[in-house]
Amino acid sequence: MKRTIDTPDNADVLGPYSHGTTDGSVLYTAGQIPITPSGEVLADDPIGVQTEQSLSNVERILAAAGLSTEHVLKTTVYMTDINDFDGMNEVYWSFFESEPPARTALEVQRLADGADIEIEAVATVPDAASK
Image: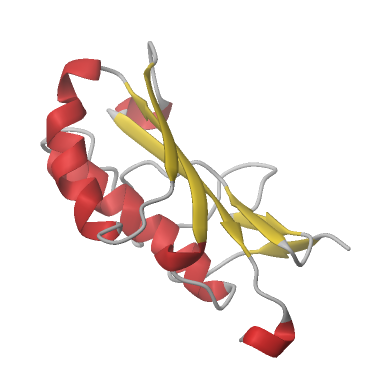
C-alpha cells in the first residue's frame, strides 16, 4: 500500500507531490534542489553548497521514514553544468562514504528556481524484523 512521506524539517512542497512515497519495501524521494527548510533557494551558491543542501534534504526525507543514507540503492543527480561534476562529487562522497549507491549524473538545460543541481534517491525499506 502506498504511503506518502512529508517532513516539516524540509521546505513545504509547492505542488501536487510529496517529499517521498513508499510501498513499504522501497522509498522514492522527490527531486531535491538546494532549498533550505525555511524556503531559501541557494541557487547563487557554489555547487558544493548546493549539493550539500540537496543531499541534506534527501537525508531528512529518509529520516522521516526511519531510514538513512545507508539504505539508498540509487541516486540520480541532475546538473545544469556537467563541468560541476567534480565539485558535486567531492561533497557527495561525504554523504555516502561506504558502500555508495548506484548513481546516474546528467546535464539538463534548466532546473526549478534557477538551481544548478537536483538530487533524487531510491532507498530500500528493511522489514520490521530488521529495524
